[in-house]
Amino acid sequence: MEPLIWDAGFAIPTKIDDLINLPRKNSLWYLLFATACCGIELMQTGGPRTDLDRFGMVFRATPRQVDLLLIAGSITYKMAEEVRRLYDQMPEPKYVLAMGSCANCGGLFSRGYSVVKGIDKVIPVDVYLPGCPPRPEALNHAMMTIQKRIQKDHWAQRMFNEAEAITK
Amino acid sequence: MTANDILALLQQHFPHTPFELQQGQAGDPWILVPADQILPTLDHLKSQHGFVFLSCLGGIDYTTGLGVVYIIRSLEKKCEVTLKVLLPYDQPEVASAHALYGNANFFEREAWDLLGIRFSGHPDLVRIMLPDDWEGHPLRKDYVEAPDYHGIPTTRPDSHALLTPLYPAKPAAEPGATPEGA
Image (tube, rainbow over all chains, first blue to last red; front, side):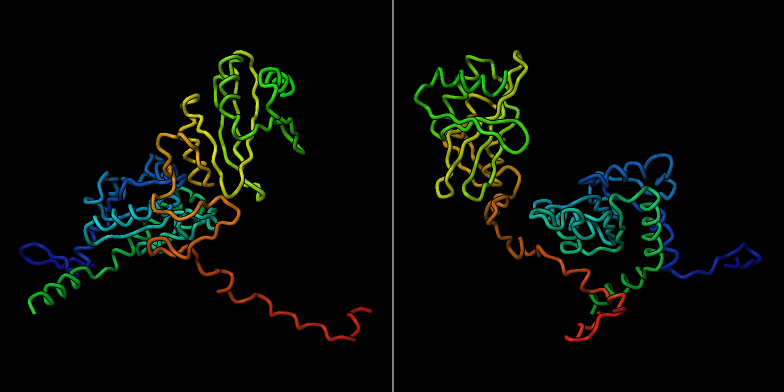
């Protein structure tokens, strides 16, 4: 983008969606929620080597303050209903990252009786991250994929459409 | 102190109880105890011979019947003994050991949860790991998985079936044709 130099100062022409998405993707807060060994890798990703904080990503201990639900680990049927409850408590816009084989398809436990065969059977998933468990670099890449996904979002348009639908 | 020594001690104290020493293809031998005698046996071993620690209590489905395994350990004699109880499928019930060993409480709830073994006299015999409304006991060999749990399907389409095969399938050899290179 080329700044337009005016007499009184300068202005940056942009789309309202880009303007909204830029802070959204750079302050992506995720829920502190780990159910298995993927949670260890998640902690490692928050550590100094692949520092998630430099993307503005910090964990929150309540679903009411987060944008991203990270399913880190295997989800049993008993837990799946709690995951659904956490997801329902998150404010829009919300994103879900299924981390590791267990969250993707049941993984190692896909022949078992107690583990959900993929968290996409319970809640919608935006990004699937394979691995058992994925390395911190892989999780970092998945987070950046989520950022790209957010940058493409037409949130202003959606808000406008919803407001229009309400007034009609 | 081997299982043989403990069996001799038990026979001496309970002369009319048919204990049986058994040995599998591998591992330690075990003492098979009649199901109605397990509580006096455990009580005797705990109070008289110092087997104060219940290492493990588990259930097994032998397909011919169910079994309960008690592994108790004596800390002063530094030895361990395995006791087993066989139960029939239609009436899998055995006395609870929670009054002797406090940690038997959770072990027995687990055995009830996964195998459906009832422990009479247990203070709170409810499921410990699976949801309360779960149907069936999943570690039984005849357990059939339900198609869904609260609307969550328990199966996933076979991912290999979705892939296109890398090589076309070979046509079946016609009868009478000579094999290649013959």
